[in-house]
Image 1 (cartoon, rainbow, N blue to C red):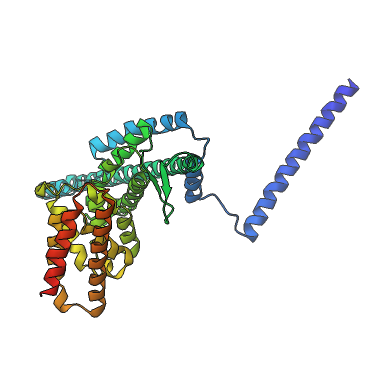
Image 2 (cartoon, rainbow, N blue to C red):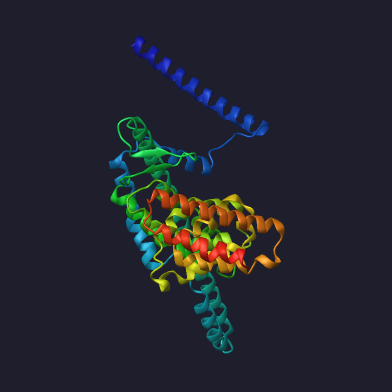
Length: 386
């Protein structure tokens, strides 16, 4: 019994010690909080931690399948219901005019109607905001997963580089694979759904009046842009499916007055995707051709090295497009500054030299003989006789 009592006494003393220790820790936290700022985990820190996990080797195929398979149902629901796009403005205006006429008879009913409509609009805006944020989170996760695959694939290809020629590394450390990199179906479906929302999100980001959802849609649009670019640069399977909406929207962004040099660099990095354009079908690319022709008169394109290289690449897309580009530049020549003339000269020379190199390599699908002939006869000879 004495031994048992002794044990109880020890236990009681330990509890008291633990309690005193807990109180001391609380008081210490209060003192620390008063004296200095205690760093906390931010949303950005959590996002970086999750993305780092998705890039790691521990995040294997089975875990990736479960993660992306869980995203698909909600993404399909958002896409079908268009819950990210609050399109109630015109409807509410029509209802306001109708309820205003009824309100002449009953001011109380009119006030309640306005309050209910205000709550509905607020709920609709909040729902759209949550949907846009969910799309952005999905884009972050897919991009992180793709970056992890690129890192692991690059490492494997480097180790096998002595025995195969499946990979070359260029000066920009970009991997160029002769074979497409496989990807799980669940991740491909999520990326495909996100890519299909680019045009609606662009419409939402330019809608009036400005709102919280509009600002978030711009951020989400940029995140999906980055995901599609990673998919393209990673040489994943069916990567051409993820540039059909990316190229037009990124081109529109570069032609906007708020465009920056970073936007030009992003567009230049995916310039090879323009080779997929079907110039035989004029109607399908008519709008895109007009935007491409606008680049030759854009000051930002002409002032940046990547912009000039991008315009030079346009001369190599198709022989029929060479004359269109030349005529667009020719209109600008009489009234531009000397620096712009030098930029145009650099563009012409780079395009002609690249057509000669491509003709010697004979590695492109387009007939490079026709392109070189078009540049020499329709462009250079026209300038010399002007």
